[in-house]
Length: 334
Image (cartoon, rainbow, N blue to C red):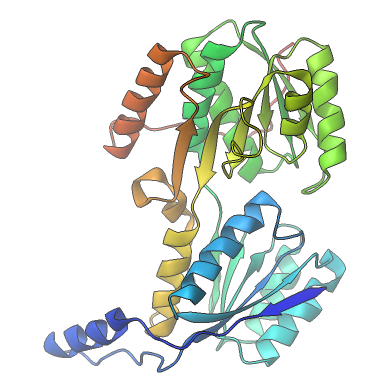
């Protein structure tokens, strides 16, 4: 287990302003922290993995501003998760961030033992009193847009899709992508595989090669390793969560990006002002909050579909178009 401690030494002026406004409004001021919050994160995979990497990046940004001191543990086994949670809680952390997908009951039980500590956990379920807030990367909207780009780009009308686990958080992104592709190309077919791992690039790559052998000329890279297969075979890939176009020039057609900063910043402000309540922060991953976006390599994409995707993006941001949320496990259609 790797633990990386960082320290910072300034506070945000907005907290003092918030307290002043509360007094002006006739209410009691929040008890803002007079020093950076102590924040710890617990990750079951390396911080190089895209999902936790976005959380890591947002917390590093908060530390750089002086809002928090940030400590983290990576590659924590599920069987060790409770112990690490307790160690951080006993260590006086103000906020503990993590992922409870495989340890839901255990994580919630530990959090309840430390009611004075705020917990923000990636979860398939809802928040719980007194201190268990949840979040997820709701980037189904940009996933739909990348589907539009891919649906127009495929020449074989076969798109391969490699995911980690068939859980709602992954399923909804893949289903949105498929709907986006079908919206511009009703003839497209999909090959869908789950590798049952959050971080196994060789296995993901092997699955991708099998799809290429079956005719896929575009790959949806929900996991690391898929883009490597696309690069080796000279076909295009769709990125997920982070933009890897710089690592795979000429290979990444478009990507649905997740930005964790809107979520992290709201939680930090709530904890610092003693106004934290267990809530579902998932909405802050929506595009309208700046939690999601999409990028496209226009040198590789059809100009007309790029224009259509940009128009759909504007409609999403303007509240005129809603991408369906479908948590059902996606299936191959050929």
